[in-house]
Image (tube, rainbow over all chains, first blue to last red; front, side, top):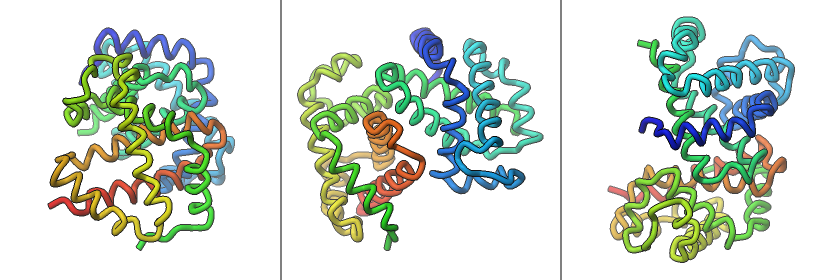
Amino acid sequence: MSLSDKDKAAVVALWGKIGKSADVIGNDALSRMIVVYPETKTYFSHWPDLAPGSPHIKAHGKKVMGGIALAVTKIDDLKAGLFDLSEQHAYKLRVDPSNFKILNHCILVVISIMFPKEFTPEAHVSLDKFLSGVALALAERYR
Amino acid sequence: MVEWTDFERATIKDIFSKIEYDVVGPATLARCLVVYPWTQRYFGKFGNLYNAAGIAENAMVSKHGITILHGLDRAVKNMDDIKNTYAELSVLHSEKLHVDPDNFKLLADCLTIVVAARFGNGFTGEVQAAFQKFMAVVVSSLGKQYH
């Protein structure tokens, strides 16, 4: 299910509208993920405060969305573009790749809440494909 | 048996008392058919499903979306025994409709996203958790009678 030209254009167009809210999206998506999928807390045992919107979550949400923003610029070759991030996730962070799907879902829910008009079914399918591609690229260096 | 907190019960009743079935139902099924196009395999007789616009305007899709959403009413009314409440529906989906049960989760995800848009900031993490737990029980119950 690779990205067609139509998908890429849709993702770039959508990002053009929502990109400036990336920090807010990241904060809400991560906060939400920890509440809805408590098993994901296991990756943040080193943070003293896991309450929604805590400074750690805010900063981390910003970091994650920075990665998504990078992926948008590398949309023509996600595998190559996210190589370094993949190495980091594979050897240092070792996040089980099943969690990428979980966070992607939370990102989609937040975008649906914040941008109901822009997040049409067509924008949704392209963004879902894109985020799946990002997850795949991030898992590339795992084994 | 599934244990529900007071918050979860109240949240589910609240959501289903507030959503407009004739808006959310069609929007959910249409979104599912666009985002997961292989689900169109079950709707060969529905006519124009060629593109998102066609799907959105399709009267049969709209009607069926409302039917599906009302199908959830019984689960809302019988939260303590969704499994048995849906036994017959599960048999129907397996024996007559031949729906791959993995598809139930796809529709549930689309419903979550449509409901989230409808409730906006009211769809907090806690509300989302309760809603997804409810939908997970519904999905599991619908798949229970498959063999």
